[in-house]
Length: 278
Image 1 (cartoon, rainbow, N blue to C red):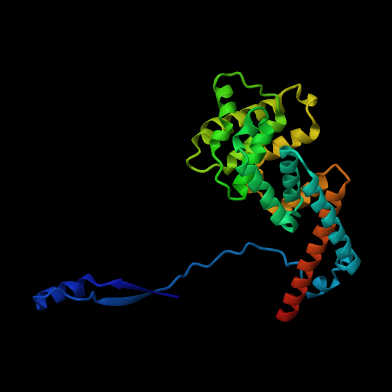
Image 2 (cartoon, rainbow, N blue to C red):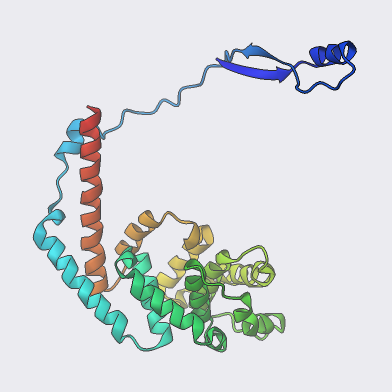
């Protein structure tokens, strides 16, 4: 039951007739509105996450030796960040750490890397490598750097002159993803880059010769066209990326153990909350 207040024009009109002065306030009256509409049932099934189920969940990754091993792996990754030399290698390492869900361990180092990239002549990166340029643009925009869409001018000119080689599937995926970091003022990204990348990726996927491309790259193209990375739920995307990661190295080892430790923390919080409610 809700109460609504509305102004009474009748009272307001009468007040004008009985006084020569303008009224200082508008008289109000109240009416009561009753909502008779009943909400329909969605017929949801009972949740499996009852008190007993939460208490039964176990996770070995919260043990002290697992946490120590994670710290050891973090040290190795920090060393990788320090020893990586080229601009593109640094950007790709940062991108992997973000997608694997462990970049929060290295926020200060990542901020420093991106600040160095931003201040050391951003535009030079875009003269030859579309993937490097798009990756740089996306990471800088994600971290709040005001990088201009003019970084893509070299490629836009080639697209408009029809001299751009469109077989670079990795570059097309990267620039398509980067276009979703555009603002309303980035008209080139909206009107040239994204439509072109979208069209070329669809052509590659539909082409009878698509088998010449890497299978992982084709899957990434399909996923990007379905929903760009910037729009996805990051924790679910981390789980998917861990499964799809086809290398066994320190990065995937850290990502797996960190994911399981964080999962245990969330389960423990759920147990405590459920215990209080019961």
